[in-house]
Image (cartoon, rainbow, N blue to C red):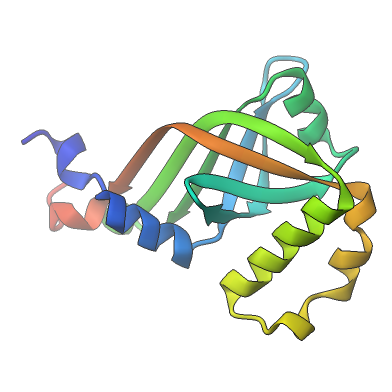
Length: 151
């Protein structure tokens, strides 16, 4: 078996990893053609990945020009511990404060926060925000621990 296949996460392992690790690096393509990478909290739900952003943010402007994005969640301090998932796909921008509030609520629920204990500031900012929805076209994953130290 080749090394690439050996370290892949199974679909169940990917789902578990993405439930546990909800912070990732979102990469968009800037107007100059260079990657623009920002840290984002996300929610994996029903085969899509959701996050919110201010509508005027650079990442949103980039997505409006070119919806191709990548989202990577990873963990590990040294090479033998590295684990992660990279999602590539097109990002849809969903407008509307109600959609933003729904995603805020779902993200809070995923963190285990009771419905009444949601951050007030995030709800108040909903009218200025949009939802970013990524549907994966390609998912790549890795778990270097599966190599057993042989790297």
